[in-house]
Length: 426
Image (cartoon, rainbow, N blue to C red; front, side, top):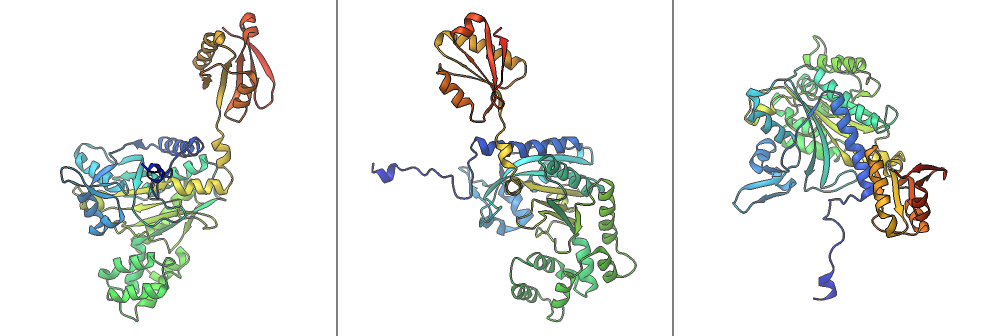
């Protein structure tokens, strides 16, 4: 075997990630914030297998989904895929036991998801995603609840109103605006898809996309004019009286958000469309205040998906919150360093084999007191022990030598202040 043949690639597959201990510290901090916020707001956890039936994903997103995901055929000829998101799986699980479930459901999961797509800043081919879903609640209380829960997680990570905004819109309101502009209802899905591409591709290409879909040339400017509406008041004026129900619902969300204490974070944004066609009403995306990163999280109401995938019709609101962008935002604020330096309480070392059992007994006693304790696996000299433990991984260190054994005491050093306290080994 040549040297070249013996060389193993040391990097993970393209678009995937390794998590070294300092990376795990950040990931765990994010996961802990997610779990704590979900529990505090009454969501219960669920999970599923990472491999999903390809037919389910095709039914939700169409045949073209195959080109965007990791799809394969197993040894028995079954068509499967690594899950690209959790919403179809959630719908499948709920449909399977729908008659036995008590509505509304408030479920959450932290799922690893995979997509085979072009990478960019904030986008990997795998990521972990926190999903919050409320099924069976038709009012905007559901939207407000998932948004309040997401803001609680961000708050736990040290991020607040000066760091991000939640941009809110409604696909139903957009459809009402299109109808008021003379666009036929059967053309609305294409128009919404085109509006979602605004800023991601040249307007000339979007115009061509609209023409290819049968939108008359004189109607194209009307589609773009909708994006000039910059407030709920301007939308109301454009639609006239009586106020459409969808606009009333959107206004109610802002009123309820203020009551929940997140009014200063919510922002109306006519440009938020969300490209997934299963969204039926209010949609939202959170961005850092300077819009330098991709969306921190996004979601909305999807009232038809459960029925479309074989269950009984049920209203639903969902939110997906990935780990990649929020880690980038924390890094840009200089906050990942402190998270990565999470430390164990105590390191216990010893000089020779004669002191091992005493060191072990002391370390075990400290663990029983609830401390996190690393007990040395081999004897080491004092200089090496304090050099190893003084690099930020521990708060305190205790080192046992022959004199300590004879005295029956151990000195515990605070590694930050360098002060020492003495305690009985027993």
